Length: 397
Ligand code: GLA
Image (cartoon, rainbow, N blue to C red; front, side, top):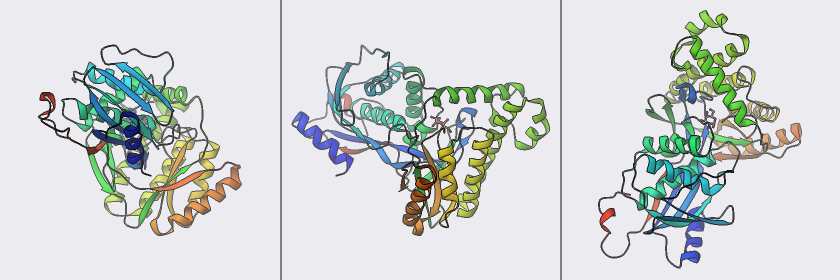
Protein backbone atom coordinates (compact mmCIF):
# COMPACT_ATOMS: atom_id res chain seq x y z
CA UNK A 1 0.00 0.00 0.00
CA UNK A 2 1.39 3.44 -0.86
CA UNK A 3 1.97 5.86 1.97
CA UNK A 4 -0.53 8.30 0.50
CA UNK A 5 -3.15 5.54 0.71
CA UNK A 6 -2.06 4.60 4.20
CA UNK A 7 -2.38 8.10 5.68
CA UNK A 8 -5.61 8.59 3.77
CA UNK A 9 -7.15 5.36 5.09
CA UNK A 10 -6.17 6.23 8.64
CA UNK A 11 -7.71 9.63 8.15
CA UNK A 12 -10.99 8.06 7.05
CA UNK A 13 -10.99 5.71 10.05
CA UNK A 14 -10.26 8.58 12.42
CA UNK A 15 -12.48 11.33 11.03
CA UNK A 16 -15.15 9.39 9.12
CA UNK A 17 -14.57 11.53 6.03
CA UNK A 18 -12.08 11.77 3.18
CA UNK A 19 -9.12 14.09 3.74
CA UNK A 20 -9.39 17.43 1.94
CA UNK A 21 -5.66 17.27 1.08
CA UNK A 22 -2.77 14.87 1.01
CA UNK A 23 0.68 16.45 0.93
CA UNK A 24 4.14 14.93 0.66
CA UNK A 25 7.70 16.19 1.06
CA UNK A 26 10.75 14.07 0.29
CA UNK A 27 13.99 13.19 2.04
CA UNK A 28 17.22 13.67 0.12
CA UNK A 29 20.55 12.19 -0.79
CA UNK A 30 23.46 14.42 -1.65
CA UNK A 31 25.53 13.38 -4.69
CA UNK A 32 28.38 15.79 -3.95
CA UNK A 33 29.04 19.07 -2.11
CA UNK A 34 29.32 17.98 1.53
CA UNK A 35 29.75 20.38 4.43
CA UNK A 36 29.72 23.21 1.92
CA UNK A 37 26.22 24.61 2.51
CA UNK A 38 27.10 26.49 5.70
CA UNK A 39 30.15 27.88 3.90
CA UNK A 40 27.84 29.59 1.37
CA UNK A 41 29.01 27.03 -1.19
CA UNK A 42 27.50 24.54 -3.62
CA UNK A 43 25.63 21.27 -3.05
CA UNK A 44 24.22 18.77 -5.53
CA UNK A 45 21.49 16.69 -3.92
CA UNK A 46 18.41 14.95 -5.27
CA UNK A 47 15.07 14.50 -3.56
CA UNK A 48 14.47 10.77 -3.05
CA UNK A 49 11.40 8.60 -3.36
CA UNK A 50 11.09 8.28 0.43
CA UNK A 51 8.96 11.04 1.92
CA UNK A 52 6.74 12.36 4.71
CA UNK A 53 2.99 12.43 4.00
CA UNK A 54 0.10 14.18 5.72
CA UNK A 55 -3.61 13.62 5.03
CA UNK A 56 -5.57 16.55 6.45
CA UNK A 57 -8.54 18.86 6.51
CA UNK A 58 -8.85 22.41 7.82
CA UNK A 59 -10.18 23.36 11.25
CA UNK A 60 -11.68 26.69 12.11
CA UNK A 61 -10.74 26.88 15.78
CA UNK A 62 -7.03 27.74 15.35
CA UNK A 63 -5.90 24.33 16.56
CA UNK A 64 -3.74 21.63 15.00
CA UNK A 65 -4.59 18.02 15.88
CA UNK A 66 -2.23 15.42 14.50
CA UNK A 67 -1.84 11.69 14.66
CA UNK A 68 1.58 10.17 13.96
CA UNK A 69 1.43 6.71 12.42
CA UNK A 70 5.11 6.12 13.04
CA UNK A 71 5.02 7.14 16.69
CA UNK A 72 1.56 5.72 17.43
CA UNK A 73 0.76 8.99 19.13
CA UNK A 74 -1.72 11.85 18.90
CA UNK A 75 -1.19 15.45 19.96
CA UNK A 76 -2.74 18.87 19.54
CA UNK A 77 -1.81 22.48 20.03
CA UNK A 78 -3.27 25.96 19.60
CA UNK A 79 -1.72 28.28 17.03
CA UNK A 80 -1.91 31.20 19.46
CA UNK A 81 -0.17 29.33 22.27
CA UNK A 82 3.04 27.73 20.95
CA UNK A 83 5.51 26.56 23.56
CA UNK A 84 9.00 25.14 23.09
CA UNK A 85 9.50 21.70 24.65
CA UNK A 86 12.30 20.77 27.03
CA UNK A 87 12.89 17.63 24.98
CA UNK A 88 12.08 17.54 21.26
CA UNK A 89 9.36 15.11 20.14
CA UNK A 90 7.72 14.66 16.75
CA UNK A 91 4.98 17.21 17.47
CA UNK A 92 7.64 19.89 18.02
CA UNK A 93 8.41 19.79 14.30
CA UNK A 94 4.80 20.82 13.67
CA UNK A 95 4.87 23.45 16.39
CA UNK A 96 8.26 24.79 15.19
CA UNK A 97 7.04 25.22 11.61
CA UNK A 98 3.82 26.89 12.82
CA UNK A 99 5.92 29.21 14.99
CA UNK A 100 8.28 30.34 12.23
CA UNK A 101 5.51 30.79 9.65
CA UNK A 102 3.53 32.99 12.04
CA UNK A 103 6.72 34.88 13.00
CA UNK A 104 7.20 35.60 9.32
CA UNK A 105 3.68 36.91 8.94
CA UNK A 106 1.92 33.99 7.27
CA UNK A 107 -1.69 33.90 8.43
CA UNK A 108 -2.24 30.28 9.51
CA UNK A 109 -5.40 28.29 9.81
CA UNK A 110 -5.59 25.12 11.92
CA UNK A 111 -5.95 21.57 10.60
CA UNK A 112 -6.33 18.00 11.68
CA UNK A 113 -4.68 15.06 10.08
CA UNK A 114 -2.57 11.94 9.94
CA UNK A 115 1.22 12.08 9.53
CA UNK A 116 3.30 9.19 8.20
CA UNK A 117 6.63 8.75 6.46
CA UNK A 118 9.18 6.28 5.15
CA UNK A 119 12.40 8.31 5.33
CA UNK A 120 14.43 6.26 7.80
CA UNK A 121 14.91 8.38 10.93
CA UNK A 122 18.49 9.22 11.90
CA UNK A 123 20.03 7.71 8.77
CA UNK A 124 21.16 11.03 7.30
CA UNK A 125 18.46 11.16 4.61
CA UNK A 126 16.77 14.23 6.11
CA UNK A 127 13.62 12.82 7.63
CA UNK A 128 13.41 16.06 9.66
CA UNK A 129 13.46 18.34 6.63
CA UNK A 130 10.87 16.10 4.94
CA UNK A 131 8.53 16.40 7.93
CA UNK A 132 9.06 20.16 8.20
CA UNK A 133 8.30 20.77 4.53
CA UNK A 134 5.26 18.48 4.65
CA UNK A 135 3.96 20.50 7.60
CA UNK A 136 4.61 23.79 5.77
CA UNK A 137 2.74 22.38 2.78
CA UNK A 138 -0.15 21.32 5.03
CA UNK A 139 -0.44 24.88 6.36
CA UNK A 140 -0.25 26.22 2.82
CA UNK A 141 -3.15 24.01 1.76
CA UNK A 142 -5.51 25.27 4.45
CA UNK A 143 -4.30 28.87 4.80
CA UNK A 144 -4.15 31.84 2.49
CA UNK A 145 -0.60 32.37 1.27
CA UNK A 146 1.45 31.61 -1.82
CA UNK A 147 3.92 28.75 -1.93
CA UNK A 148 7.42 29.89 -2.63
CA UNK A 149 9.93 27.03 -2.35
CA UNK A 150 12.91 29.17 -1.25
CA UNK A 151 10.93 31.04 1.40
CA UNK A 152 9.49 27.78 2.73
CA UNK A 153 12.95 26.16 2.85
CA UNK A 154 14.37 29.13 4.76
CA UNK A 155 11.45 29.12 7.18
CA UNK A 156 11.84 25.40 7.86
CA UNK A 157 15.60 25.78 8.34
CA UNK A 158 14.86 28.51 10.89
CA UNK A 159 12.45 26.17 12.70
CA UNK A 160 15.16 23.51 12.79
CA UNK A 161 17.82 26.00 14.03
CA UNK A 162 15.82 28.07 16.49
CA UNK A 163 12.92 25.91 17.62
CA UNK A 164 14.41 22.41 17.44
CA UNK A 165 17.94 23.54 18.30
CA UNK A 166 19.77 21.85 15.41
CA UNK A 167 22.36 23.99 13.69
CA UNK A 168 21.93 22.76 10.09
CA UNK A 169 22.64 24.51 6.79
CA UNK A 170 20.06 25.09 4.05
CA UNK A 171 20.65 22.03 1.84
CA UNK A 172 18.12 19.59 3.30
CA UNK A 173 15.16 21.97 3.44
CA UNK A 174 15.98 23.47 0.05
CA UNK A 175 16.06 20.16 -1.80
CA UNK A 176 12.95 18.89 0.01
CA UNK A 177 11.16 22.08 -1.09
CA UNK A 178 12.52 22.43 -4.62
CA UNK A 179 13.50 18.93 -5.80
CA UNK A 180 12.60 17.86 -9.33
CA UNK A 181 11.60 14.48 -10.65
CA UNK A 182 14.42 12.63 -12.43
CA UNK A 183 16.87 15.46 -11.83
CA UNK A 184 19.54 16.43 -9.33
CA UNK A 185 19.68 20.05 -8.21
CA UNK A 186 22.81 22.16 -8.02
CA UNK A 187 22.10 24.68 -5.27
CA UNK A 188 24.11 27.82 -4.70
CA UNK A 189 23.71 28.06 -0.92
CA UNK A 190 24.45 31.78 -0.92
CA UNK A 191 21.94 33.00 -3.51
CA UNK A 192 19.71 29.89 -3.32
CA UNK A 193 19.69 29.83 -7.09
CA UNK A 194 19.25 26.34 -8.46
CA UNK A 195 20.12 24.59 -11.67
CA UNK A 196 18.96 21.07 -12.45
CA UNK A 197 20.67 18.26 -14.31
CA UNK A 198 19.62 14.72 -15.20
CA UNK A 199 21.77 11.78 -14.13
CA UNK A 200 24.13 10.58 -16.85
CA UNK A 201 22.33 8.22 -19.22
CA UNK A 202 22.39 4.61 -18.01
CA UNK A 203 23.41 5.62 -14.47
CA UNK A 204 21.41 5.16 -11.26
CA UNK A 205 21.84 6.33 -7.67
CA UNK A 206 22.07 3.77 -4.88
CA UNK A 207 21.73 4.60 -1.19
CA UNK A 208 23.97 2.50 1.04
CA UNK A 209 22.79 2.62 4.65
CA UNK A 210 25.54 1.31 6.92
CA UNK A 211 22.99 0.61 9.66
CA UNK A 212 25.19 2.58 12.06
CA UNK A 213 23.94 5.66 13.90
CA UNK A 214 26.33 7.86 15.80
CA UNK A 215 25.76 10.09 18.77
CA UNK A 216 27.66 13.37 19.19
CA UNK A 217 27.11 14.27 15.53
CA UNK A 218 25.75 17.65 16.57
CA UNK A 219 28.80 18.69 18.57
CA UNK A 220 31.21 17.50 15.86
CA UNK A 221 29.12 19.31 13.26
CA UNK A 222 29.20 22.56 15.22
CA UNK A 223 32.91 22.21 15.75
CA UNK A 224 33.46 21.81 11.97
CA UNK A 225 31.37 24.90 11.33
CA UNK A 226 33.43 26.91 13.79
CA UNK A 227 36.68 25.71 12.20
CA UNK A 228 35.43 26.77 8.76
CA UNK A 229 34.38 30.16 10.11
CA UNK A 230 37.80 30.60 11.71
CA UNK A 231 39.48 29.95 8.35
CA UNK A 232 37.21 32.45 6.58
CA UNK A 233 37.91 35.02 9.30
CA UNK A 234 41.62 34.51 8.85
CA UNK A 235 41.34 35.31 5.15
CA UNK A 236 39.00 38.22 6.00
CA UNK A 237 36.30 36.75 3.78
CA UNK A 238 32.57 36.35 4.45
CA UNK A 239 32.82 32.56 3.90
CA UNK A 240 35.10 29.86 2.50
CA UNK A 241 33.04 30.05 -0.66
CA UNK A 242 34.97 33.22 -1.45
CA UNK A 243 38.41 31.69 -1.88
CA UNK A 244 39.53 29.51 -4.77
CA UNK A 245 41.97 26.62 -4.56
CA UNK A 246 44.82 28.50 -6.30
CA UNK A 247 44.72 31.40 -3.81
CA UNK A 248 44.29 28.95 -0.96
CA UNK A 249 47.38 26.99 -2.07
CA UNK A 250 49.46 30.17 -1.80
CA UNK A 251 48.16 31.10 1.64
CA UNK A 252 47.41 27.76 3.30
CA UNK A 253 50.62 27.86 5.33
CA UNK A 254 49.19 30.81 7.30
CA UNK A 255 46.61 28.53 8.93
CA UNK A 256 47.25 26.10 11.74
CA UNK A 257 47.36 22.47 10.62
CA UNK A 258 43.84 21.40 11.62
CA UNK A 259 42.06 24.48 10.25
CA UNK A 260 44.14 24.13 7.08
CA UNK A 261 42.77 20.63 6.47
CA UNK A 262 39.19 21.65 7.16
CA UNK A 263 39.44 24.61 4.78
CA UNK A 264 41.12 22.50 2.12
CA UNK A 265 38.16 20.13 2.10
CA UNK A 266 35.58 22.88 1.72
CA UNK A 267 37.44 24.84 -0.95
CA UNK A 268 38.14 21.79 -3.10
CA UNK A 269 34.69 20.32 -2.50
CA UNK A 270 33.09 23.47 -3.88
CA UNK A 271 35.20 23.17 -7.01
CA UNK A 272 34.45 19.45 -7.32
CA UNK A 273 30.75 20.21 -7.08
CA UNK A 274 30.94 22.66 -9.96
CA UNK A 275 32.93 20.14 -11.97
CA UNK A 276 30.24 17.57 -11.16
CA UNK A 277 27.73 19.88 -12.81
CA UNK A 278 29.85 19.86 -15.98
CA UNK A 279 30.17 16.07 -15.83
CA UNK A 280 26.41 15.68 -15.47
CA UNK A 281 25.67 18.05 -18.29
CA UNK A 282 28.12 16.11 -20.46
CA UNK A 283 26.43 12.84 -19.41
CA UNK A 284 29.81 11.65 -18.14
CA UNK A 285 29.19 9.09 -15.38
CA UNK A 286 32.88 8.16 -15.17
CA UNK A 287 33.95 11.74 -14.44
CA UNK A 288 31.13 12.20 -11.92
CA UNK A 289 32.07 8.95 -10.18
CA UNK A 290 35.70 10.05 -9.90
CA UNK A 291 34.67 13.31 -8.26
CA UNK A 292 32.55 11.40 -5.75
CA UNK A 293 35.52 9.21 -4.85
CA UNK A 294 37.74 12.28 -4.35
CA UNK A 295 35.02 13.83 -2.20
CA UNK A 296 34.98 10.81 0.10
CA UNK A 297 38.74 10.83 0.54
CA UNK A 298 38.64 14.52 1.42
CA UNK A 299 35.79 14.02 3.91
CA UNK A 300 37.64 11.09 5.44
CA UNK A 301 41.14 12.56 5.66
CA UNK A 302 40.75 16.35 5.74
CA UNK A 303 37.32 16.98 7.20
CA UNK A 304 37.37 13.81 9.32
CA UNK A 305 33.65 13.15 9.36
CA UNK A 306 33.62 9.61 7.97
CA UNK A 307 33.61 6.45 10.10
CA UNK A 308 34.99 2.90 9.75
CA UNK A 309 31.54 1.68 8.67
CA UNK A 310 31.19 4.40 6.02
CA UNK A 311 34.71 3.75 4.76
CA UNK A 312 33.99 0.01 4.58
CA UNK A 313 30.79 0.39 2.59
CA UNK A 314 32.40 2.92 0.24
CA UNK A 315 35.34 0.56 -0.32
CA UNK A 316 32.97 -2.33 -1.12
CA UNK A 317 31.02 -0.13 -3.53
CA UNK A 318 34.10 1.30 -5.25
CA UNK A 319 35.52 -2.17 -5.85
CA UNK A 320 32.34 -3.29 -7.59
CA UNK A 321 32.37 -3.57 -11.37
CA UNK A 322 29.04 -1.69 -11.74
CA UNK A 323 30.11 1.32 -9.69
CA UNK A 324 31.30 4.65 -11.08
CA UNK A 325 31.95 6.16 -7.67
CA UNK A 326 30.79 6.27 -4.05
CA UNK A 327 31.10 8.49 -1.00
CA UNK A 328 29.61 9.15 2.40
CA UNK A 329 26.64 11.51 2.24
CA UNK A 330 25.12 13.93 4.75
CA UNK A 331 26.73 15.05 7.99
CA UNK A 332 28.74 11.82 8.42
CA UNK A 333 29.94 9.71 11.38
CA UNK A 334 27.44 6.99 10.44
CA UNK A 335 24.28 6.73 8.36
CA UNK A 336 24.48 6.48 4.60
CA UNK A 337 26.80 6.52 1.65
CA UNK A 338 25.73 7.16 -1.93
CA UNK A 339 26.92 5.41 -5.08
CA UNK A 340 26.60 6.12 -8.77
CA UNK A 341 26.12 2.79 -10.54
CA UNK A 342 25.25 1.34 -13.93
CA UNK A 343 21.45 1.20 -13.97
CA UNK A 344 21.49 -2.22 -15.64
CA UNK A 345 23.77 -3.70 -13.00
CA UNK A 346 22.16 -1.96 -10.01
CA UNK A 347 20.35 -5.03 -8.67
CA UNK A 348 23.49 -7.16 -8.63
CA UNK A 349 25.47 -4.25 -7.21
CA UNK A 350 23.10 -4.07 -4.26
CA UNK A 351 23.49 -7.79 -3.56
CA UNK A 352 27.25 -7.87 -3.91
CA UNK A 353 27.90 -4.75 -1.84
CA UNK A 354 25.54 -5.90 0.94
CA UNK A 355 27.47 -9.15 1.17
CA UNK A 356 30.88 -7.47 1.02
CA UNK A 357 29.96 -4.99 3.78
CA UNK A 358 28.40 -7.64 6.01
CA UNK A 359 31.54 -9.75 5.72
CA UNK A 360 33.83 -6.79 6.39
CA UNK A 361 32.00 -5.36 9.41
CA UNK A 362 29.42 -7.84 10.69
CA UNK A 363 26.73 -5.13 10.25
CA UNK A 364 23.65 -5.70 8.14
CA UNK A 365 23.38 -2.78 5.70
CA UNK A 366 20.33 -1.73 3.80
CA UNK A 367 20.84 -0.79 0.17
CA UNK A 368 18.37 0.50 -2.36
CA UNK A 369 18.29 2.18 -5.71
CA UNK A 370 16.49 5.50 -5.53
CA UNK A 371 14.81 7.79 -8.06
CA UNK A 372 14.91 11.55 -8.04
CA UNK A 373 11.47 12.75 -7.01
CA UNK A 374 9.64 16.08 -6.92
CA UNK A 375 9.92 18.43 -3.94
CA UNK A 376 7.09 19.24 -1.51
CA UNK A 377 3.73 19.00 -3.22
CA UNK A 378 0.02 18.46 -2.80
CA UNK A 379 -0.80 15.02 -4.14
CA UNK A 380 -4.55 15.13 -3.50
CA UNK A 381 -6.70 18.22 -3.22
CA UNK A 382 -10.45 17.80 -2.89
CA UNK A 383 -12.41 21.04 -2.98
CA UNK A 384 -15.05 21.02 -0.24
CA UNK A 385 -18.63 20.77 -1.52
CA UNK A 386 -20.41 24.08 -2.03
CA UNK A 387 -18.86 27.56 -2.39
CA UNK A 388 -15.27 27.96 -1.16
CA UNK A 389 -14.92 29.92 2.08
CA UNK A 390 -13.85 33.54 1.55
CA UNK A 391 -10.25 33.09 2.71
CA UNK A 392 -9.46 30.25 0.34
CA UNK A 393 -11.01 31.70 -2.83
CA UNK A 394 -7.79 32.87 -4.43
CA UNK A 395 -5.58 29.96 -3.50
CA UNK A 396 -3.78 27.74 -5.92
CA UNK A 397 -2.78 24.27 -4.78
C1 GLA B 1 23.56 17.86 7.45
C2 GLA B 1 23.01 19.27 7.48
C3 GLA B 1 23.18 19.95 6.11
C4 GLA B 1 24.60 19.83 5.60
C5 GLA B 1 25.10 18.40 5.70
C6 GLA B 1 26.56 18.26 5.37
O1 GLA B 1 22.78 17.07 6.60
O2 GLA B 1 21.65 19.26 7.84
O3 GLA B 1 22.78 21.30 6.20
O4 GLA B 1 25.45 20.72 6.29
O5 GLA B 1 24.91 17.87 7.01
O6 GLA B 1 26.77 18.56 4.02
